[in-house]
Each structure stands twice: as structure tokens, then as C-alpha cells.
Amino acid sequence: MKENKKIPPATVKRLPLYLQCLDQVSDDDIGISSSKLAELAKVNDAQVRRDLSYLGTLGTRGVGYDISTLRNQLQLELGLVEGWSAVIVGIGNLGSALAHYGGFREKGFGIVGLFDDDPKKINSQVAGLVIKPLTDLEKYCEKFNVAIGIIATPGEYAQGVADQLIGCGVRSILNFAPVLLKNVPDVQIRSVDLSQELQILSYYLDRPVLKAVD
Image (cartoon, rainbow, N blue to C red):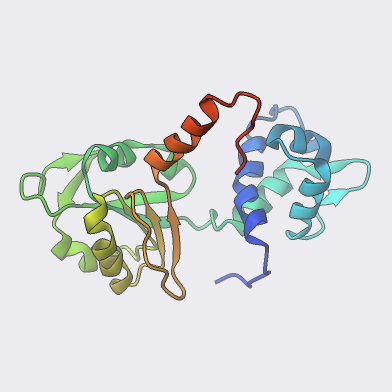
């Protein structure tokens, strides 16, 4: 476990963005300035310098940041070097789409198990993985040292699934169900409610002069 540097949550949210921006830089470039990175990330350069200062002394005044070093440090800080095992619970349309998404593995997250309680889905295959019953969840979590649980169930089942994942030792949960899960000490929960995001966009449709903020 890495030392807790007490990086502000807002900064943690921007670190993956900076990593994504580095992928947009030409392979011929060796370094990148804070102003260029700020332009790509749509933030100001003072914010970039402040955020990256939490990673240590990486930049050189008047020169900028070595891209390779910065990428490695961002990956290290985000825990992307060692890779993490994840499971998806709820293999409906959304769960199936998530299982097929190749970007998880590219970023170091391996989907090692799919779970559902629908007898019609159990033992069928999605994205090369056999859907297992929830009764097998604990066994999989122990066998593959699962770190992340992804919930894609209907809302009424999400809390029960979260409780089961936590009971299996999972300490990070990505929740796509349209409900808020209970906060649990030492468990990180991130929720993505797609319908809620659409409602926010809907608010701005008739207000073109306004700009949505994160």
C-alpha cells in the first residue's frame, strides 16, 4: 500500500485527465510545458503545476516535464502499474457492454468474473467469460484477489450487491445503478448515474449561454 500523501480529492480526479492528455502528445515530443498540458486538460497552468507538485519535483523551470517520467509517475500514483482485478455484477445490457469494453484492460484493470442471479444468464458467455451465480462471488474474490466491484444491476438490488462485495473484502466499488449506496468506512464508492447526467445536460439545452461545470 502506498503512503498516503493526502492529495486533495479534486486533484486526484484530474490526475487521470493529465494521463489521458499525455496520450494526445506526439511520439516525437520528449517534454511538455505546464501551459500545453493545461491547454489539453482545459484547466489553467497554475492548476497543473499545483496538482503535479503533489507527485514530487518533476518539472524543470523553463523546460517543463519529461513526458515519460510524468506518465510513469502518474501511473504509479494512480496504482496502474501493478494492475487490479475486477468483477461485474449485473449482466444486462449495460453490464454486457462494460464486459466488452477493452479500455479497462488497457489501463490495467482486468475483468476476472461476471455475476448475475438470473438463471437464464448463468453459465452463458459474455466477452469470453462465463456468467456465474452470486453464490460464487466470494470464491472468485478470494481466488483472484478482486479489488474492484462494478455494479450494473437495477437500483433495488444495488445495495445488497454492494454489501456482498464488501463482505468479500472488496474495498472499491464503481456503481452504475441509479441509487446512492451507503457510505462504509475504508470503502471507496464512485457512482455513475447515466440518467442523472442526461438530466443535467437537459438543463443546459435551453440555456446556451451557460456552461456546465464539474
